[in-house]
Amino acid sequence: MTIYHVNQASDAQLRTIRDEVLDRENRAVVAITGPQGVGKTQRLLVTAAEARERKAFVVYFDVTTTSPWVLRGLAEAFLKSAKAAGLVKMLGAPAWLRPFGVLARSKGEAYDPKSVGRRIGDALNATIPSILLLNDLHNLAESREIEVFAKVLEEVTGTIKPGVLVMFSCYASYLTWLATRQPALSSRVNRVIPLVGLTDDEARLVLAKKMLAKRIVEELEPTYPFDRGAVHELNRAARGNPRRLFELADVALERAVATHAYQVDEELVRSAFAAREKADAAGQGAADTPEWAETPPPRPPAQAVAPPAAERRSVWGRKK
Image 1: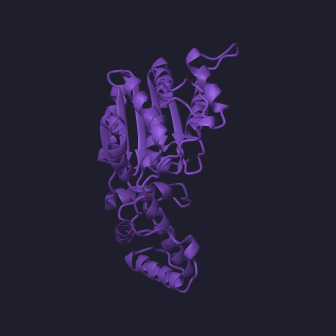
Image 2 (image 1 turned 135 degrees about the vertical axis):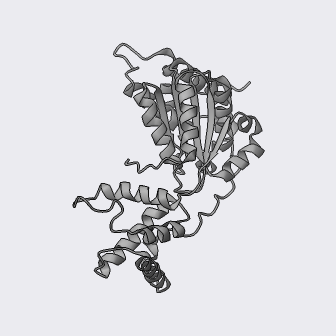
Image 3 (image 1 turned 90 degrees about the vertical axis):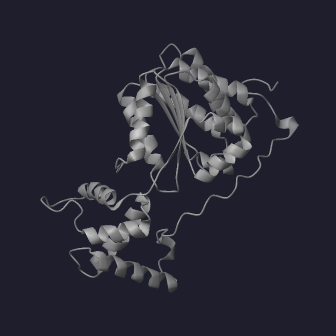
């Protein structure tokens, strides 16, 4: 994945936290919040890249709406990271890694969240400095594990030692739900970092980075064919959201090609929006229209449904 990253004030905070953890001076549990497309995943990927450069053990896992059993996917992520880090030897794996193989082969059996959480915490402690990154944790709303996995994380965050960082991204509304439904886990989040939209200067820089990858002719303005007025109008319409900024820039470029324009200015951007809105009103192009409005908050998480008692089998221990 290509990362068109622009440093903001939040990145300085994250850098300080990373440095303290990687230097084994502290442990941390960090939540990065914001709407879709604002850069949450980007921050996790930057954290992963910088931590690997410093030889830290990194586990990155995307929580998706299609993940039937989140914990099984996380176990597979641990196994993959251990193999990539050279921790799996020809004669066997370290003791802390073996339980992850059991879970990765499971088929959705019930599990004891405290036992599982301790195993994950022990694995992170055994590989210090280590970082666990969970992307889009709000997608647990679509999972049967919404309640039980939160208890797993509660145990993890209570087990980790200095030199371990647990970081997750989510919508702000999920963090509010967490504070209400899982106060013990919520209280262990050391730092909440809400991401804010791009300024016009930051929007120019992120567009310049993306345009650079497609540049053929040298000695052009970094944001060519967009002038300052165009960037301002695009960023205003995108409300500072990087993903929407790119989507709207594509709409403006399509308009420029259609009208044989060599420069994209503020007037052309507005005409591009007007043309797209007209096409949408006529029922054309609606399927690929960028989401210009604010992202609506996710629906409240549904109550998890526990499997019938007859189907419950323990993987890593029985509930006490």
